[in-house]
Image (tube, rainbow, N blue to C red; front, side, top):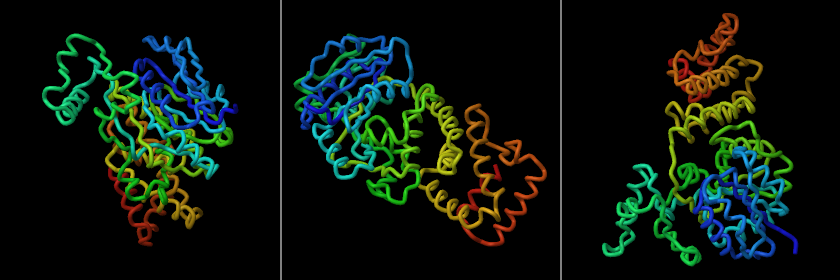
Length: 396
């Protein structure tokens, strides 16, 4: 029977969460004979390799990387091995709603030019107790424990931590009965944006940020059109956004599926290291695509939000269309300052003196032309919001 859907799971030291994810895939309503799951193990040092013996009701392939190759390469390995017309790319600690595969498959049959995300009905769930959870995770777990259980049935969290470094909360049967929802809480991505722009992200020019490979789906032909994940990204973050940006630039519609839920299983994490990786990778993203829609996110690291920066994209595009010949230095100045902001942040330096932040802007001839254009723009009174933000940057 023809494989219609390939589910690509990348994993690194996520056992037993990845086992729960596989159990959830066994519960899919989609025809399992037409579905395959490819698990790419990026050199895990935990018990993940034992999953090579896993025998589910769907086609299953375990691929192990003997050395850590990184998130992009691991995804590309999975894509290369996939046989399905529809690709679902997910992190191995994600639990998918039983209707997930069927729902996404139907969406791609109705419209072949889609990438479907799972951001609005995104939850975090505790399925394993781990002694290495950070303080915030323990606090959330205790809160859920109080809310969801009568006193006599509550987990004795501290007692479990003293006895076990890691303790499973559920069995395979529990997963089939969706018991993991007991310790789940809503954690949607970018809820304010979806509330304003809807699940089709109409009028939102940074829709690529929703392409988060916690879970996405697209046609194989669509991926082949834009190319694989860029393997220049190191560590955590942004390889999926860069992939999403290429989809966006190729005119692929990015939409959310609000009909099915997804559950990200909690695991120990260090946000400090991830934030630093994210900054470095975002700067690399901007070098690949030195466009306003990419660089403008630098402002989010210095106090602006994603709704504000979308408004700036609208104004900037209109300004560039109308006055590209009249204001070339002004238009260029935004990109130069975005690059300077990212460089300063990566180097742990204060974001100041942006007018002198690049060699181009320090050039006296360039600066004179820029200031003349700026005065002309001020006199025109056009695009006041964009102008105000430019002056805010210049005042730093």
